[in-house]
Image (cartoon, rainbow, N blue to C red; front, side, top):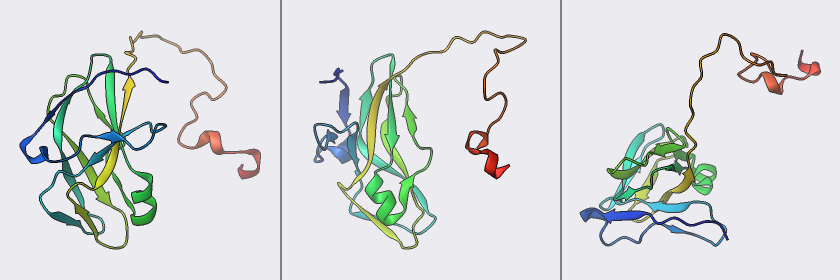
Length: 155
């Protein structure tokens, strides 16, 4: 069993009748997030929209929450998230929302209560920067943007 932390959650008026975010199975890494919209909304191909989830969180200091796409929606409908993963900082107290985008070929209908994303809670390591005139050598060096995928055959 993994470690557990308690998250304080405050429901907003438009999310009072909705189920709380929950893990779909014992092995799920993310809590399912649902759309707290009135009725339904249609996302045209290429359209993006902020979809509210109807609650606010208080994450403990030293943790973040990452909003991630649901693989089934991405595969079947081309629906994913912009700014993915979206980071929720421990000091943010506003409503949790999901920036959906329709990369599919057909309009997609989002309905109230539909599971639209997942929320993964993770510890955060804070970096302390130390300015240097030189950096240690590495096998990769300054190669980036696909450089590690280049083999001798692609020369």
